[in-house]
Length: 465
Image (cartoon, rainbow, N blue to C red):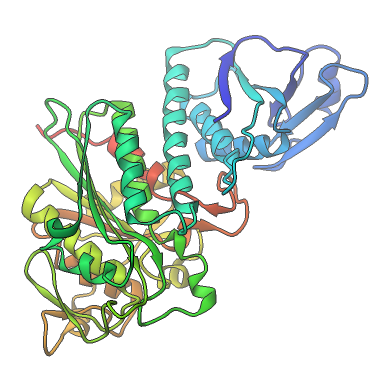
């Protein structure tokens, strides 16, 4: 990641960035003040031949809230050359959360991924403020940790499946955790997965066997325990219910939920948050072979209940059922939050930037939605209609895996059986996990959706009395 720092003095050897069409000091002031403010989230370039600095950028920050400053940061970094050194002159009364938004936008908008090694940006950005306060320092530190988490989630999701199999992904989690004191990891494989019937079924068709990773942060004195569960299908062919080519070519992203919960848990450790967090990551590759699970198979999950497989391309809910059953039986948390690139119906219902939120708990649903709004990761709460449960009925098992009805809603109703008595939320984030073009702080490709929202939520979670 390129460097962002705080300073109190303008330097004529650097490019100057003026948010909102503000006024430069000295003779340049009238020149800049005469121009209209840049549109929200856009940058207007003012060349200044034979003068210093050689150019000035006018950046639009919208309404001046955190989201507007985040959009401004992304636009600014895209307007800068890789090796350019710039200063952003900030208003004297800028709130700390706006500074955080600007820094997040700069780092997130500057993200890049290449399969082959690529030179990192060598430039730097200084934020010019009248007074460097502890609140500004904290905001910049939190922005860096949040952006680092989002970068990791994007890197993991963007990695081609020729590299990324369950064993590789588990190794990445272990390596990242080892760099942070207080984190522990347990990786289960082979005979250790005997009770994980769904995970074994989905992964049974691949030459890359499944893994189940448990990543734990348990600080002294923590009384609230949150379990984060993320779908980790490292590639999804659809199995015997094979996907069409166009639907399959981006299925390296089908572990975006796992990437988000891992990145968020690592960030919790970096922030030293006083809350116990366990990330559960079921990892499998849904492949086609003579050992692949079939439509019509009956699967026995971790909790002992059974599902009749009616579509091997509905594999996400099958592996998540084991992880959720494990959480309810072994961990008994205060609440469980599940993230999954689960259904294409999510995009049909809500578009490309919005996840579907399901929870029977109004308080949890509201808190997650608020955290998503603050982080720039939008979600919309959808219902869990009781009369739709009839669609899940099976003649030979406790339920069918892929019933008729609204796809995203039915997947949530399927998963509801496995949360036990715990307070829970399920986020279907298939659509916002991938961006077709640069869009604000998102760069083309994996978005890392969910990591930033979870960090915000967990940072504000009160301890139990």
